Length: 366
Ligand SMILES: *Cc1c(COP(=O)(O)O)cnc(C)c1O
Image 1 (tube, rainbow, N blue to C red):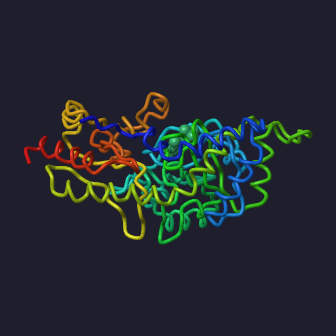
Image 2: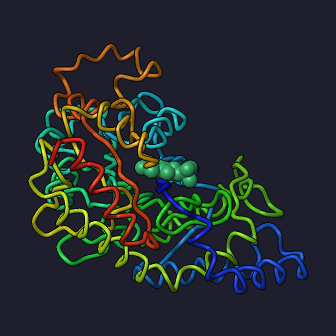
Image 3: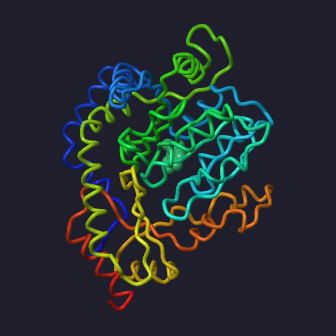
């Protein structure tokens, strides 16, 4: 049996007629950059979250960059973020002129440890970017409390956590700004690059709209950038958005299945979901001391796995200039040699889930 890590062919199969129609309509109308479908998607995505504004853009990385520019980040100012994320979260801090300050994760959830944030704050700190990693919300209450006390802004990186909740409230509604990626493999994906930014603040929404469209259409009030959503991506996202809740439930069912079949197997540590949070399982990430051997065993049985990510951010060559030591980020450092992402996608068949679980059990001789 072959088990892909994700199956976008299967994911789009049942939507094919609707997708084709949406694409054909966009071509017929020649609304290639932004246009009515993108406008409608922005409204629908904002409404779904109960947030006033959604500013669409070209991808989730631009979303972070645009948000930081809107919040007025200046050279030399510091932004605190997690040591465990995709590099978009930190590279955009530098692009926006700021200095990256990494913070370790907690031992259980792979999200930033709020206890560690306060010790990283200096007179130059301007903001915090928690990441709802793998689909589980970061611990927002203490993060927001610290931010309020130190007058810092908060950007939620929601790229992996569409519709995840924290104490019953949907992520993307906590910070000053929340950023989304609609990269094809994300829980809500376009058929190319696309991104979005949520905010309740009118001033930020209008500045970001202007900045992402060359500083204003017709009248360039400032120098901006070109970060626009394609009309086709807006049309496709509108076809897919009504299915997001259902897909999220299916991801949870796959995860529940894995949880039952893998409980107590070898030294495996299954995903831990903290009290008051739920998980939308963009990724299902287990931990084991025998990670590389398990991965090779699964590959031999036709099962694709991924490392998200091969290293914690402070230990990539890109950040060698910060000269960080493993003991500064003990959890993130340990996890980089333990984590393994198993296949998960909404359409994953029960036989495949069972086959992955059996293959893992056989690795441990169980
Ligand atoms: C995917 C991702 C991004 C960036 O999104 P792109 O659309 O690929 O630019 C940012 N942050 C996190 C945590 C991500 O997983």
